Figure 1 (cartoon, helix red, strand yellow):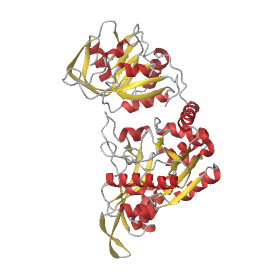
Figure 2 (cartoon, helix red, strand yellow):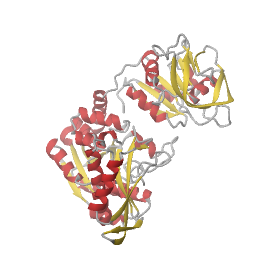
Figure 3 (cartoon, one colour):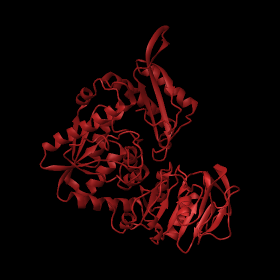
Figure 4 (cartoon, one colour):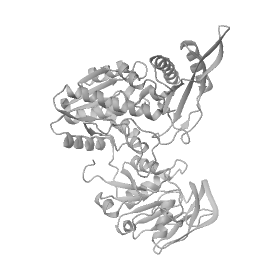
Length: 514
């Protein structure tokens, strides 16, 4: 829940692959932004009192049957609106302009020529590179608009109606391939919308603390602590808000990275003096996972068992009804919303059992990972936790392709520890989003060790770069780093005779193998 008066710019999602990136870029300009469905009724939008709206791109054409259409009342709200790609075309069509398939597509980087006067392009070069991705174009602008920029194949690459503060661009200012994109967004946010750059780590903390206090009151609460940055920051935020009303429960399900349990104990019990209950439950989780190979089944089993452990801990305490979780905005999106298909169930979103007895407290639910890190630094969280690479809630269970057993966990844990050590040794750890080992448990191959034939396991190495895990590209690790990782794993981890490197990006792959 946001504090009343927080300046907000809403992104209406028309199904674009970049909708999440638009919201991120707005927040990077220190203005709060949230994604809503494209057909949200105008009364609901007005109730959120936004400073402005951004209409995202999308894969449809505005002139086809069943094309996504927003509530036309938004154009009568009197607030600034920026349409991007499909958003531009939809705005033009609703307001009386004309759109057509000109049979000349523009994809990739394109030169844009800006007219003599434009609010969107204020103080920006008249000639600049932008990123295009479209085959439809505005052929006639609506009454009150004028074209303010063009490309070779798009005479209306940007349009403005300054009186009504309505703007549109055919290109994508939110992507890195549009070098001046952030400045264009700032001109819209600061000048057109009148927003101030107040969405900072300090304001995020203030918003969260106030919301937590209002939700918790005098209740005793528990926090599911995993040791990763998300649950750690959630715990510190709640502790800042309610102090000793919070007890952290660290469920060591045996699916953690090497030495992770000891680090969690040290950080929270000794460094922050937060009440901590350490539940060692590896045998319990392995029993539940016995014989299970389906990835979704694993996630749901682990998510439910987490809750059952919390319920048992709470039953021994006095009247605990609330549970803190480190759920992030991308977790919510990937677990499936009305306009976003479910990619995979996140154990702390879609994996929560329907009969759970707790009221959830999710202070990070509206934040992206980079915002969580900024909040963690502001709260004084140790760098080794703040900058720890993301780790899935189900842990190593979803990095073992096949049944999860104690022996397979031990093997993968050692291999994963080597990957982490060598990435850090090469000075690459903080520049990589995630780097880890995967055990395709049933994939064995022939090898030779000590002049003898072996038939042993394969370890896959995965390293990706990303901004928020919505998209990711594989990292071109130096060959010498890969060589050290491979050599160490095959020499130091019994039962492995082959190491491979995953060079797939997201999409079409996901970051995790399961």
